[in-house]
Image (cartoon, rainbow, N blue to C red; front, side):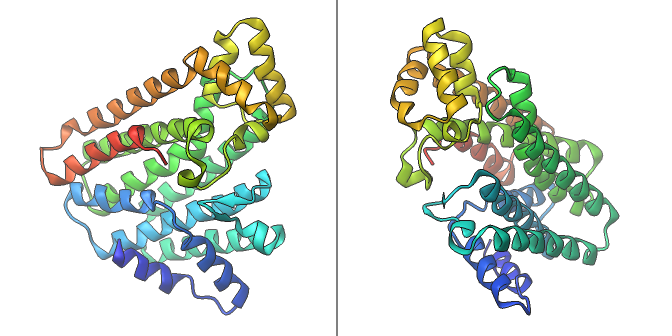
Length: 309
């Protein structure tokens, strides 16, 4: 990961000072770097980490960072990772355009690798992520959304980049089709579990630890699984209150909404779904022999559902 940081700094260079300034601000704002780590970890399991894996890890991180810049503009967010968002500091136009720069820089880097399979995976992933963003937009304040619809958004918007990260680790080592698919499946289920827990923490976490204001999803009208479950399971009067809070973005009613969610054990349900996804991720790795590299990925799957931030 230290080598990844070196490549990040080298690759952010631009003749435009504002691009350098915003890129540095967002890249070094304290993220988990989970997606680039997955490129390295999957590469390690598939045969060992190479310099090309460091490049791929940075490409994945740039794509992820670009989506964050655009997300924060769309959601009008002013806090991420405990810091003011780039759009809050520099304005929406600059954030959108620097997000575009990071996307295009990522594609410049992948072309230099001269691997058509890598380009295919990343082109498909970025296109799917964009579809997920639009699907999420269509579902805003849509209290009729189904659990299947919600999971589709997660698969497109979040889990797809996890899947790309783990698949690329294998592809760069020319792993067998079985090993490549196993790592890709691991990434998809891990990403799904990770987002499910994110949706729980948005409502129950410590705002100081998770780095954002609690109830963001409620304020933005995002119908996440905890609220969807409560709408389906709570008595009619309470379900109507949750629906109304979502339709109007009533963060002032967050305490009442939380009482309802706790009463119907919505968070327990979502955590159980996340646990199943983590288990499926671990089972996907059964094709690999035991070892430190495999154990690290198994441990990460458990961390994804037990974390508090």
